[in-house]
Image (cartoon, rainbow, N blue to C red; front, side, top):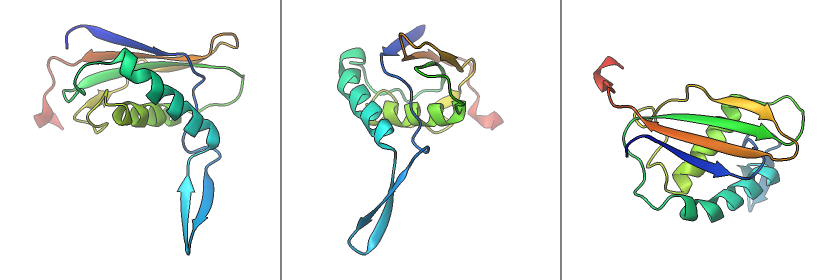
Amino acid sequence: MTGTKILILPFAPRTKKNSSRIVKIGKFSKVLPSKAYEKLEKQCLGLLPFLWDKEPISKPINLKCYFYKDRNYKSDLVGYLQAIQDILVKGNVLSDDNHNIVNNTNGSKVFLDRQNPRIEIYITEIEDYDNDSI
């Protein structure tokens, strides 16, 4: 991978941890993400195969994301980043989201765009990555 790869997901960002649900499965309880997150994940996983036809990334990258919300509410950048990283792993864009692959998320921001909510993802390989400095 050379240069910056850009993926645009035309969906309003959602986090996994807000409005999580507890469901009973027999004698056990399980925490599930919100229905809004599950909808986002399903939409993204349906689109990602058309946007990413390469092998999953396994080299160090900067994952810069611009999250354009559909409503003006307090939001959690870290929650959005966690959610989109999980989706990118599940969608085979990233082989994993540990620090050896998603080395940083420099430049990520949250914006408001009521007419065109979306998630813009900029993936840039880090050429001079030194794993020994960690």
